[in-house]
Length: 245
Length: 369
Image (cartoon, rainbow over all chains, first blue to last red; front, side, top):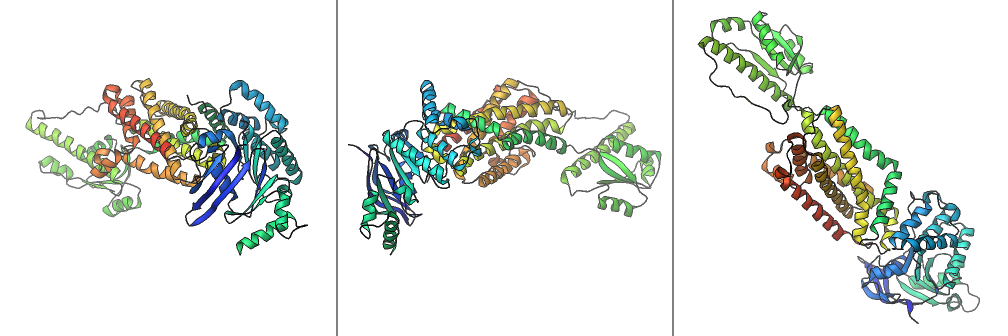
């Protein structure tokens, strides 16, 4: 089966700083793959390279089988992306934001209406369509951003700290939605700081200072340190300290 | 062709309409500028406040002072008794010119020796002093000729008859208001587009936008096109106000004017796009736009005639689009000329538009570096 993401020695330097250092990673289709790591460990830079927002300094990345440096625009049609800083237009209403992204992704008129209805129903945005995005709470704004990223039915979804600044109930709802998407066949790559969210991923990669320090299912990663009974959070802290030494 | 242009256009249009500050700026700037510039810029200096020291106090001297007043350049505000009082009035700024008619003025006049009259001008402001100087020289000349021809018993041998074409009243607004169309368009169009792109970058929506398959051309054209309509609206407002508030004639082919303005607007918007590829923040965009405005106003011939500039300034003036647009807009509005006289300028403006759009599309990257 074709991998959703396959990187080989993927590297990105900013001047003297190496933000991502020879990352080799394979994410299977249909996974909910978690990317963990402290701030500055290279998670966002990795996602941005996979989306074609940053050019790799070295190495390669295949996204849905396409090389991002060769065919970035084709890749963009197949992926959805939600940035850390939610990129919805605050001075447009929910409906106008959705309409805009539907148009930008080139949905045909007839198809748009049906698809919009699906997405609105899926994320329960029906009551908010006429509201300005700027007046939504953090949780609703994040749902709208997700709706915009899903409008073209991407095969692969990148979520960069999607639940930062969102209340616990909304976070839980959001993760139910992610699992729904995965069940429907969408691959999800998500970065997070929350261990309870990491536990819900099918597999995890832990990053520190631009490289991998652990990879596997949550149970496998937890077991890597201190054997049985160790929690994911323990593993996270211990592995990171070990790496920084 | 360009299927994603329309969604972009629609979005930009809605945002423009919804942003009250932008909208107020788009309508407010032209109106305020027109009123300020239209009333304030008067290069034909009239009614210079004048102080008179008439030492002879004779019908002849009063006649002479009336001749000065009749030029319209001098307006007598006060009479004084001595030279110190006259100097003081000019020093205080109560008057900008002083006329001194000496005791022996009528006697010299009667005798046929040269009678002298002194005109003192506050030359700190070169523009108004120049007007005063030439008016004073004119008064003396006219009087001389009249006296000489009377003495010689024949009419004057030569007279140059100057006919001021296109602006017979030599009115400043006729010159300034058409130029103002260009200045306002340059200012608002460049600023608005530069801000529109940089704002998306600052708010993080540009990042979201460039992970979509939209092409650079679709993004940029969709972004600037709504403002073309704004530019045409602004121009209409200025022309209407100019016509009814300042009596500026609309002589030539208005349709042609709109056609050329369209090209100029596109060039200005393209320049704004280009600025947006050079700066990172809204504040920088604002500074860059204003920094660009100054050479436009100074070098284009909007306020100061280009012929009077040193050669290097004239050359630099050829680099700003406004220079060409001013020639077109004044040519059409005041002289009523058409493409046969202006095609060069129109071609150059079109060239600016094409080059600037191409340069911005080239510089714009669909990545974050």
